[in-house]
Length: 149
Length: 202
Image (cartoon, rainbow over all chains, first blue to last red; front, side, top):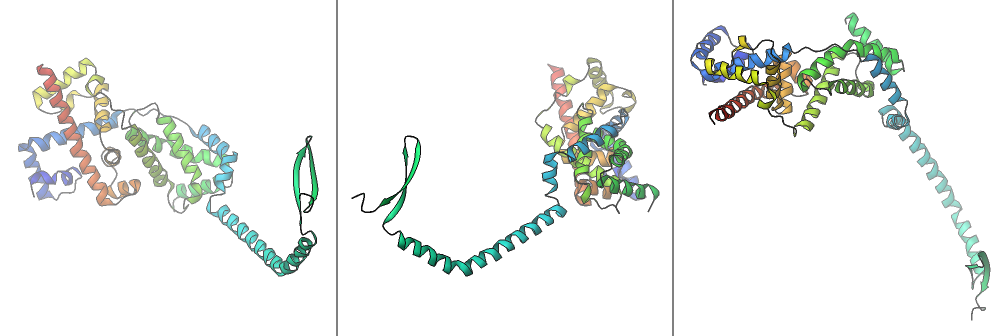
């Protein structure tokens, strides 16, 4: 390992005493490492020296957060959270199962229903409903099959 | 558990129950820390106030996911760090002219220092706004992830395990990022100087 490779460990204060002495001797002769060390020290102290002006944003931020939380789009988003989402899924499952039960019941009565409809069709055999517009009036009439001939 | 932590967890609980005062108090406690991190990672910008606000609004939206048994500080700072990295990625297209941003006086002094010492002479740079800008601009040229890691480790002096937690990465990855940031800073400074010397000869 080149001594230059110890730079990060030296910088982070992770070298044991013997290694540190070795690296410090290296710094005296290696311009690259010396420049890097000086540059980093300088950048860090310059960034640290910058004055951070004090500010108090608590009132504004809290007001804004609660305004947003009470808005309609936040209500929708809140439904995507785990708790409400589970409630929504449960509701959906209950609805689906109810529909399934209803449709099953319909299936049980369907043969009777179909029989009834067949009877209606057989009674009206040869006739159909048509819709035409006549003088802006919707006229529905039953057209006998024989009439159109 | 310390008193501060338990008080934080009570504030979080009350905020989730709809108590605006509790959230205001939480913001008041952590706004300086968030402001500092945002300021150091993003640099001095007029957008920093909006950034701090956005960090707290994001925290508010995600507060129900936060485990109140854990300390709130690292969590909010992690949101801040991630937000800053995103912002830096968006900004990367807008590179600034390094040299032209310095005042003529600062340019002369920097060149004089370099001519005499072959590197940056710390003693001659104190209290100089132009050099702060130079340092920030060098940081601006870094990959956002490297920059955030560098600021957390070098400027804020955090241990690597904490840097890793704030960046949401492993300690090894955090070390690699900091190391690369150091190398990149040196390269950029060299490139900047060589460009300046060429300009000086013309």
